[in-house]
Length: 435
Image (cartoon, rainbow, N blue to C red; front, side):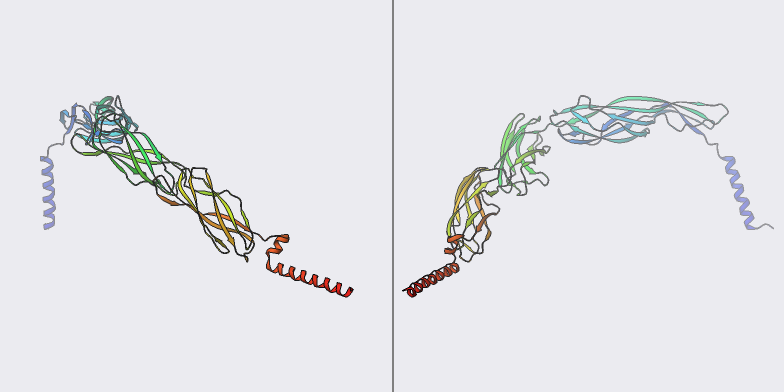
């Protein structure tokens, strides 16, 4: 019995048979001519500034074509095309350019015809590099398909390859610009916890005359040197020109006696009227220790109930001269002072001065060593006023000994007087009885 399903199956088989009979045999293609054509250039803008660390993105382009092709169903098509550059390795060098190439040779892989590959090289432009266009040699090694041997009667072929080496020239432009060279950075009264000055001297070692130029100093990271006035307008800054600028800075009180970095930036107008920044330069500036004072006089001894003039000697242990110093002592019970502020004058580093205080001690003071706080108020070369950290004046309260101790103690003196009176009375009574 013929069913609808059997009719559909037979019709499908018949259509497939007709299609197989009418379809032409598939043919393979073999290219018999062609080769890679490699060139190299820098991607994007190829202009760089002297003294900068850069990345050079080198584009490798293969514009090679396959010139002839053979179409035959009996040939074996090779896996590789003649215009493919295989196993490409590139090595960029500086040549005569004022550039340091820091990257090693790099392997790209295969570059097919009509395609590109980009490889990055790290480099540094010399700080004193003159402007101009420089050609960087790029050594390229790669493998190409040279020929194919086919074997008669067998669907196999043998590919033959050859090694190729070529040097391409990559143009790099160093821009005309202002390049600041730091000649000196001299501190003036630059100490921890105070304001001071930095005198900066620069030279333009670039190839462009700076116009409408401003020289700025910037804080370097967490450096304790913080600019107060950070920019100076100098106007013209010609090639080879030298300029000196003065800046007020503040130094954090946590700084110690050593060199700390500051950053230098020059902003100028170029030949196209654009304002541009030079590469940032960094230099070190010496910072002195914070102004401190120590008491170098010995411990003062004083008796309860007495008043005396004590001498306290203050020594400047900092790294800078202070002006118009005034010493002050803070009284606490059981002490009182008739003159708690004394003028010391100017003190150079390592110099000392004596303050004479009139101190009274109450009679009921407990004998022991007391510590009285003292501080020094002074001005610096900028006429800023500062107060030193507190120092301690040691005062030893001691009772008098011997007859002086008895005479100075009310209770002991009362007993002594009573004893003398009693002794005199006893003598008088004895003489009276004797008569």
